[in-house]
Length: 376
Image (cartoon, rainbow, N blue to C red; front, top):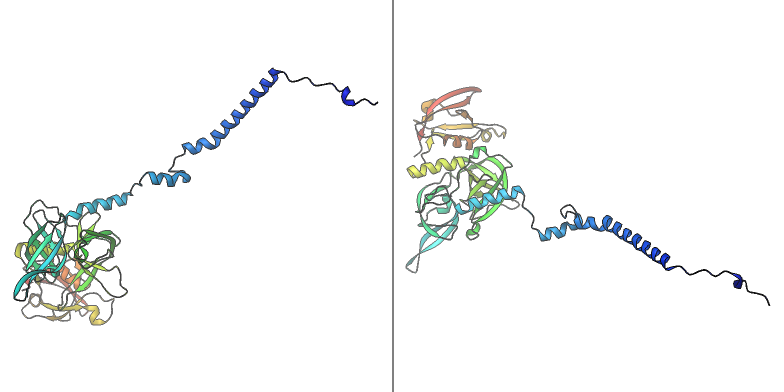
């Protein structure tokens, strides 16, 4: 019988307990080192990462922590909070007779702005036109009767007074320092019941000429794209310094037209307000001439100056030596390129003031001195 080779192999000795223990300990140490390496390389960085720089944590951080407003937003909010308490609603009431009974009813509403702590308020003349009673609604919902101090149809401005002291008010800024592109806020009460509404925009243009209906008069306006609706009339146009640079007055409303609002410049407002407060009317100077834009005469829009169509007999213009056909190009040091600039400049003077007028006559530049009369 053949012998199995397996019978001739030497049997292996079983491993000793000590060697098993050493082998197990070595495995544990190697495993622990691998786990530590994975933790430090992959897990720990994610736990300690700045959520503001880690895009994976950004959304979660935004949900837990409200974002901080930008510096520009904070400035805008501060200005709005400062001016809002000085913006009021102005309501026009009139008596109507029905079935033999007379009743006081609201005929229209607009906005106004408090311009002094003792209760003087500027608004548009068309807001309070022919009112039997004027009521002012303050931001705290208090309603007061207002007295009409004076009104001026040509500039569409009116000055009101309420009997209360210590009121918040908005100071005036210089509209002549206003630049195209400057940020502004329009504050008012659109439609008569959306009180304390603020819209934002920019200065779209300055020196926009607006003709006064049924008159040769024209004045410059500030153009803005801040939303102005019915009821905003008489409210302030405010710059980022919290100053009044205009009184919102007109919105160009036509099919396909958006974002064209016009405000009366603060320089005009201040002059009219001063006169209404002191004289209850505007003491408007007068030269005694009938005028039109030179571009209207020549048909060339590039032509600048104001053409004198007629000189009134006995007027300040006749006494100074001005003639029909002359073209006014400046008053004092201020250039006159179109009608509105002429009347804006004249409104800086009072009746009796001496002014220097530069004209073109037959392609020759002439200078005349005039003593201004007073418009009756």
